[in-house]
Length: 369
Ligand code: NAD
Ligand code: IPM
Ligand code: MN
Image 1 (tube, rainbow, N blue to C red):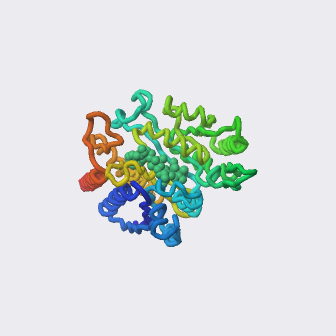
Image 2 (image 1 turned 90 degrees about the vertical axis):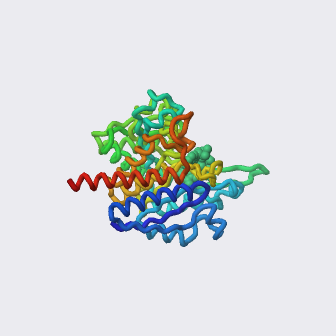
Image 3 (image 1 turned 60 degrees about the vertical axis):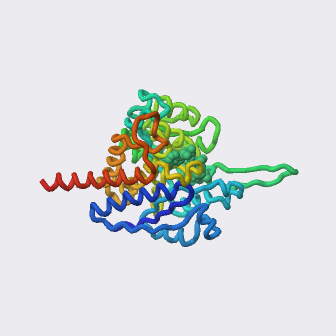
């Protein structure tokens, strides 16, 4: 298998975690005889410093020509004072819009080995396994008009929440298709008691549901959903929601997995799929070599599954992550008390890489007998 992967390390901990994800992918390529080609390009604050643009033309062209894009994180406090359009994050939003992926898949599950890292009691979080399907190209992030103006000597800021039925339909189908391969339940999250966009959302999702009679659909308001996710996470299978609600709820759900550093994502449905951990550039820990690379590594596994259809090899990476956690290795964000052995970002990456190599050897040995 030949794969052309553009890597955008980005800002803060982005380069630290993507380096480990690439290392694991290289191991998969060498053990399975694939030809993965990695091309690094700049994006975000780091690209602003180098070129004046958060998404240089060369980066965008390389991404559009790739089989998949693997991104670290974008954003830095250095640029917080700039207007929205000039911030590093604007480069990320332009990249998402240009690549066209409208469905952002964010799986969140409980890891028994990390039970003590979660603020949730084990009996609450145990067995939780949720797939967020977050709409990624609509809502307040992209709605026009937007801006800050002065009216009668006072500043006024405006954002527009806008959804068309077809934007809702296409992401709803992704959620129902995903549910068909899981536990056949979709919970659609909105604010239909207040917002017109949510009323159209609920009505459209309900009509798409009729094409999937085997899937159970329920609806929750976003405020109640935020509470149910951490009081009874097992009640959920697939959570389908709009852009901003999905952004907020998926970070909240990270407490189920033990840390934001654990979460991965895949953005599908466009011309080129985009893979990125859910976390940001984590300026508070950047440069220290302590960031958790498992979210980025799990995003690489999603890349193998969704873009390359290498389901078994994606599962090998996931099994390797599990093995390393079961063996007690922890970056600081998932270490609690005295349990486990503290490791750096690079050590965690090496441990997962070694576990991938071992799992592949075992498979070969098994097939040889
Ligand atoms: P953040 O996700 O960067 O960090 C939130 C908290 O989680 C911090 O305490 C951080 O140390 C911790 N954390 C995050 N990733 C971790 C990891 N891999 N290992 C261990 N701990 C980790 O969110 P923030 O601080 O609100 O935002 C920082 C910057 O990142 C902002 O500029 C924001 O816009 C940007 N951001 C980018 C993305 C992205 O590129 N997809 C996502 C979220 C935030
Ligand atoms: C995420 C991030 C981004 C988002 C920001 C950095 C634009 O928080 O990927 O979750 O809000 O989508
Ligand atoms: Mn976010």
